[in-house]
Amino acid sequence: MINKINEASSYIQQYLPWQPEIAIILGSGLGPLADIVENPITLDYKDIPHFPTPTIASHAGKLVIGTIRNKKVVILNGRFHYYEGHDIYTNTLPVRVFRKLGIETLIVTNACGGLKDDMEAGTISIIEDHISFFAPSPLRGPNLDEFGPRFKDMTEVYNKDYQALARKVADELAIPVTSGIYCFFQGPMFETPAEIRMLRMLGVGMVGMSTVPEAIVARHSGMKTLGISLVTNKAAGLSQNQLSHEEVMEAANKAEKNMVALVSGIIEKIES
Ligand code: HPA
Image (tube, rainbow, N blue to C red; front, side, top):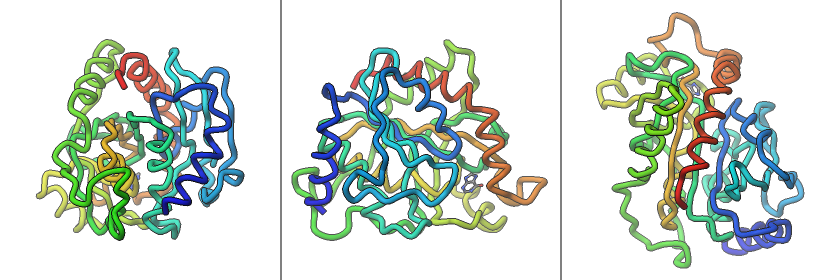
């Protein structure tokens, strides 16, 4: 694992004109944030050692290095989902690589189903905490001591100051946001209505197939994480329709302007 992390980060390092401050992982349909990067340097995953190629069309498979509002960022445009068949270590490899590159702040975005009444399609929701249902632990196996301890506290996976900043920026931009607990399911099938009823009893707000393993790895290595979900549909059984990837993509595309405005506003003000 350490060799893979070192080889991937050494490769990326050659292209970095400066020390990056913020790493950003883009979820389904949120790729347009990569288009506002200034002076971009784009690397194909296929050229980065040990990075797999994404298998779904809505994930570009490119690492973009550049600036947004004068902040030095590295963007993972297309993530590796567990449901694609990658093991959990490959799924979270980019986060280890970001840390190895000296980055201490992670902004992670995703598309999700909404469970709370204030979470209609198109709602942006700030992740307060998570529940990891049936995700294998990305920290299982020999501990990577240079990143963090064997038994890591998970009290504040999603940094509270960053959550407050996200709410403040949303307020200033008059973009409505909600917040809630994000629950991970392996996918790739959407949940059943019975699963969603269970999650509602547990107080879950959002459900999706990503983010949690990455956030755990970020927390292990002491990175500060902000998680932002875009609700693309009401969760199963709450929605009038059957769920589909097309519906998810359509809602993501509609909300893309607000997501880009919010995330770039946060980037401008965030202290890494
Ligand atoms: N469930 C899981 N993942 C999702 C959903 C959902 O309803 N919508 C978008 N990603």
